[in-house]
Image (cartoon, rainbow, N blue to C red; front, side, top):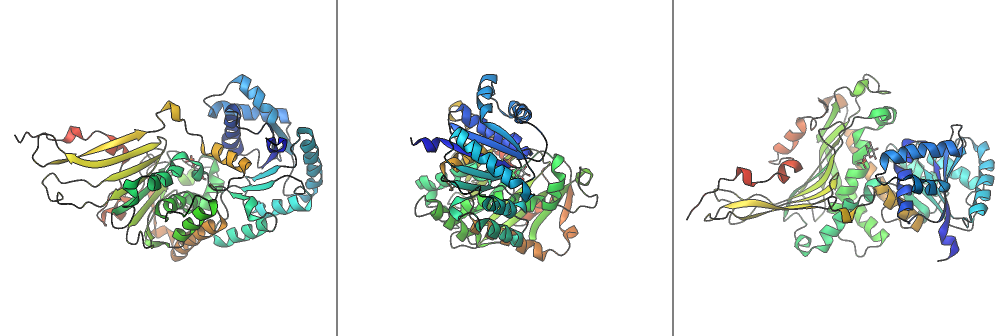
Length: 492
Ligand code: BG6
């Protein structure tokens, strides 16, 4: 290996935020434990607060102890040498000359060969400003690679996102820009593609002729906690649907790419995103009772903490197939899955014990796996059917411990692989979908329903499906055994 491939400085703007302590640092630590962290990697956390590197390391250790199941004192002591804290106000350009000097010295000290990653985990309106200062003050004039990573949210709507994108693109070429949607780093979301495209049994039926509807659910069981200030400006539609759920939808609905190149995959996703429509009559917003009493949330807030909707995918492949999406906070459980319900049609459909539709469930979290329901002959009956399932739990299998999403993404950034990051076109079209929907909603009061914490959201979201003859499938009910309810009848 070329010695330069083994050195880099990874700078985090927003180094004292929750994301750094609870996601990025634990992910770096895990990579370190697995021997996959670049050897001469300096992780520089930037914060405004006055503290030493030693203080910062102590805080990181507390967070890692909390998050990592594999924490050991010895390996943390080994890992901590990678961490540096640098105090500066990134909004103030006067701080950049000293920062440039610090980075050059550090570069020489660790032999980073000028390889630099700038991870911007700040409010999005700072993205262009910080990028510009990095350029102006010579932080990008190095002989190595210069990559920029942008955390979500990427803007608040299409107009703000476009402005941000123009600002960062003046500084970084597209090939050095990594826009994060951490759901793309989740193992089972990457698996959607593989399951669809590597199994002959699904390839031929992945279309409107065989699929009845698709359900994408991401439930969270906690309220907004101390993120009320951010969340109230965003809401579930912008915080989750615009990015994570629409990305999942695109992976389910896209055409198979010609090859597995980053650009080929992105282009196919964009083609789908261009053809998604959501009607305001088919959206349910919810707010959990007590939300307006959360810290930093105005008492008259109409921000939604829940969204359930029907999306239309107007492509040749999926025209007419409803894609139901729902996500919310403070619900009954933390669970995410994609459920593909196939059409229920065959010579057996009119039998007394009617056949059930085939269901393919891709379980994203907390359990990772695949569930598939098919019909089979009920033993000892003449021609009764019963549904049986094949249920594979990947996360139950100790051998296949999936990496956390951020581990995969951080590794890909250091390797220069942009496949699991979103392109501007994807973000652009996702915002257009959301903006169009919001523009049609004159008075949000008419669309928002209160729901009790720890329930599965406003009951109106069930009516949304019932009026179309569908139900939200409940994974835990599905995975409970069928045999309990079966009347076993000996027909011989
Ligand atoms: C983030 C949202 O993008 O995703 C949060 O801003 C949300 O509000 C989080 O809680 C959910 O991520 P995960 O990986 O815990 O499902």
